[in-house]
Length: 543
Image (cartoon, rainbow, N blue to C red):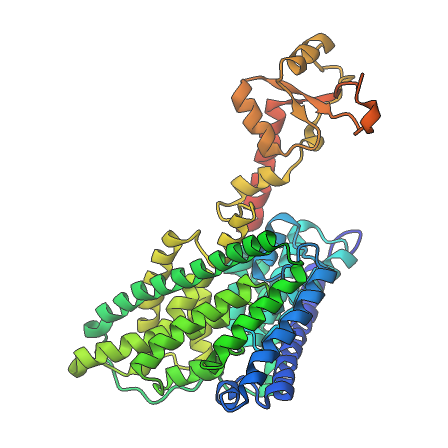
């Protein structure tokens, strides 16, 4: 496999093994969070909010602070930027790094997120698990010296296994890998990714059985044609809620960065401060602690009133923004499900009160809202709708969910940069959302297409020197995107490539030699390289 790449049978075997590994990673992460919550709070996520509400206030306040301190020390020690890795980094690895993700940073992020969720953080477990699964596939890809295409497919297998194991949702896990991470539905990747998703689901069911994550109450038959406008309106409302939640997280990130820089505090202190804020919020609102499955289940079963639903949603959004903006760790998908169920419930209470004669169950609106907000946040309407179906085991309300999901995704993609993850990458200057025609030139270096001055068809040295002296030149190490921009500016057929002089000491700046001309790049070579890269990307996507 190292010399010739894996055969189809070998690749499917690797997909199975990676799916099993990702499933065990997701299972271990989930059980680790539950064990830590039981140790600290005396309950796991299914009863955590109720139990925490009975604990002494100083305990609820202090636990997130201590957890934030440990998280800050871990991230400060093992990551260069004290930032947790999650789904956005996996998308970047698939697009720009040949299907590889950071290993050391990924392991540190998993540990930090486990502590965050076990000690009162308000986020989700799926993002860190997806990256942890990516670490597994990265080790396999490096071991067999996998090509970028094979590396991306292995990464897709890992993501599918992790998501399937996290939600007991094999179909949604497979589609999530295609829709969100690989961002294509290539046929050559579908079978191994499906194998990995099934493997991850089996690992989950060996521990938890075939039970769904949530159990819905019995619902009355619905006059769908009458209620469809209500679900369309719910989709639009869910998009606004999702956009507000994402905007709050991004603003919290910017405010936190500004405050830490302004105060001059060490970066390991940032999660500690976030933990203090969370602890203060959790004293009157313990439902913000952890993943939030107890709150979601209560909303889906209609056990929360209108005022409670609205207040809980607002407070949960603030808590999620503090957690992620404070760089404590965790993901955004489970919080989106909590927010969606509360939004849908509040909407459903109002809708059924206004038109009781033509309205179905309030829980159905919570169900549809959960899918609508989740799809808007992830930018993944297909896989999110399927995750909601598989988490509840109720396939009879698909029309309502799909109606709300489609409209929420369409509107939210206009309010943010397509999704939470792609907006994260945009904020870091990684332009993956526009497709390979944008990010491929940013990745490629002109070194690969540079011609030497000694080549037989090289231009005359005098002409090259005149261009360089006139400011029409490229710098060694430039990307293809930068080179093409310079060709557009100058209109030249070729440009010299300069190597800047080595930095000199303070006393040696006088008489410093100028940059060295190390070759030329032709415009036609740059265009040819981009065309070949785009053709390869298209072949992978449609293969």
